[in-house]
Length: 334
Image (cartoon, helix red, strand yellow):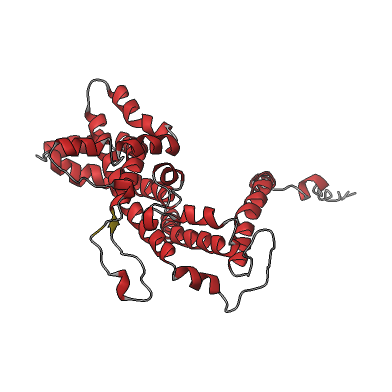
């Protein structure tokens, strides 16, 4: 007599195992919920407000107490109006000159200071503190001090007179433009001389003096990351100090230079309080900057203040966007 045994019934998966979610998916969902509030706030207070500013710049809203949100005709007329203004052209000239000269002085000064402190044997902490100390000050304090230094009757001019220079520059009150490229009286569009205003130089020197410590700190971090083996190998191969600096140190400091450039560019384009403390708009808007332009028109011409804010944003994006694209491509390749 044979007995047949029935095959065991298949074990059905428990309901819990069917609904099990991978750990990485859970982590992604949790992170999304955690960052959702901050992303929402950033979207509202950055992109929504930028959109509102763009709309106001295209509208007829001229006086803050009586908003007129109808679109101005012709479309973009506010931009065409301010582009032909002498003050706007002076502002663009000033902010471009300030940015270029300031970045060169601050970055080169920070690099030289970092190389000096990195190789000094005694008192490294003291020198680092001395160079970083101006960065702890506000632009208002720096502006008050440097305004006295470049006062036409005291400070630097007193030294120049003692050296035999009878008519030193008026500095922040001087309307001279060095290397002027055009005559503003010869055309209906260009209403200012494009060059380097003498009155802008003290402001540039003051800003570079304050921010050189920041650039130095960036370069010190980059120098600390350079392997000593690279420098030792170059010395064994017979490279001198200049060759090691040119072919090993500077190439490896390039990421620090780019980061420092972008961060200081942001400071240069939005400069406001230092200019207010030292000279204000100056005679003939010789030291006027977009920040002062926006501040002055906030209570009288909302459309013009908004238009200048958008133009300043576009000037920033011209440099920031290529930098972000470059960083994104490097991450993709890595």
